[in-house]
Length: 52
Image (cartoon, rainbow, N blue to C red; front, side, top):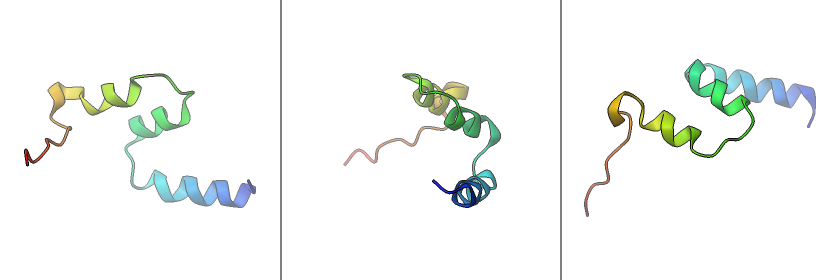
């Protein structure tokens, strides 16, 4: 991938994603990390299904 494209993608996401989430994205993959991030603070960040 060209360096310019990598820089453009990183610049686009840095303004929109919290730094702690970007840390997860940049780190090597580990099972359950994004799920744990979603359920932080007692699960208040998880959108509940509409129940339909």
